[in-house]
Length: 581
View 1 (spheres, helix red, strand yellow):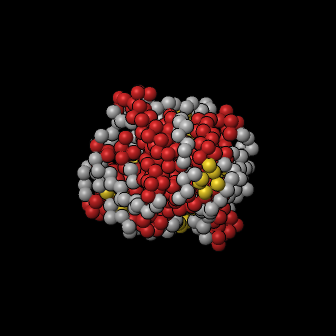
View 2 (view 1 turned 30 degrees about the vertical axis):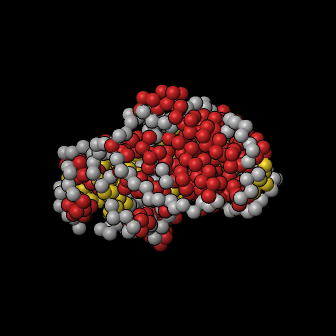
View 3 (view 1 turned 90 degrees about the horizontal axis):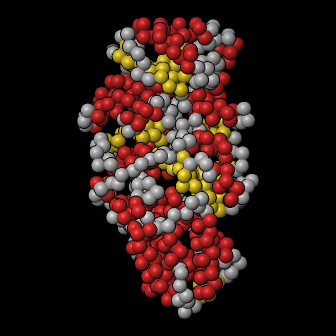
């Protein structure tokens, strides 16, 4: 290539070479990831960004058009602190070189300085000794004879700056590592130099292995539990305005882009409140939330050999999910055509706030990328993974995860034939069996027996929500409405929704649930409710008088289940000692 000017195809192939070089050290970057928290995913996040650029960017001979395409792809694929900083760097390049069909070295150098400034401005509290430092120092030179010289000098400066990061950030020195994001950027520059030297970006992306990466995990203090990100459009305030709105809602706040397309990243304990607040200032196009506590548990030395995963239809209190290290794949709750992550970016409380303003709401199964991202991560850190899903008769979630499991021999998918509290009981039982050290085949056998003895009985005030979502037939709903029935909803042995009993009042259908509970000796039970704890507690007292046991748990049902059952619903999930009809 002509090393005196840079055109669209040149920058694209150079950046693709850099992307491939970074992707090839993904596992290494995960291993040395200690800042801002050692959650073991910096490499995965940066690799996802690079792969998105490879997949989505469309090069032309025009430099400006190509950089716009790369910046747009980077915004779509940015994940985590380093990934979002990297994306803002690309955005700054595209912004400064807007309208240029090609660039001289001096033009590109000016654009890089602008891009570095943009990256710093995107962060609420920039920290030195990170990718930011290496970005800045890499291009702090005037070796601009040609692009070969310019990038060789930039790589040399980056390598020196990378080795100095432990002296600038104490947590790096304490753990004997350099900054993971900074090393990722340095690898990116190595790939660019490869292209400039050899004129191709054809070296292969090699398979990544975990090796011993999680045997040397660093101490992690999770103060804000959820790494939360959103891709926004139709933003009503400026980048600085967004930062001021959320500056007190968590840590590691990064805002990149502009009013047309913006990405926001924050570590927070309340992603549901974050997304409720953001509804008033922007449209949410996509979102991602990582539970950093659960990531920490996954990459520690000592954890069960089998990971337990369920979807968010399972209602289990957070403290029990934490005690048993239960991972969760959220289904989607659609509110006015905006997708929220059930039990994560929308809670039951925030959903009820949305109901007043929303015109439409529905649910859908997890998408392919979310499933693969979660299960790929767990496959790296556990010998096997057991996924326990909501009844396949009620949702496509089982089938979606099963399709993935066909490609990964570590993954086992179990149809709970339950939902809500019933599914929660099955998941807890599986967790206890894993803790006992049982092998997968034995666990599956015991779960098949356990789920056959488990039932859920729901007291609902109206069937209109279940009819709307297809949980019971429209004809059944019309008949119930005409007769003013207050039915008891249950699942049959295959997991399909049925009307189990009928009553003319809520008090009457509670009596019917008590009768159903007397069908056999009770092994354990749980109570769930939709903002109706008093009713739920009163029913629990009646069940305790029957069996002499207190509930395993009492919890509020998740938003998607609440959407179907309606406000005021309560349910008894019960496992009998023997099979019942």
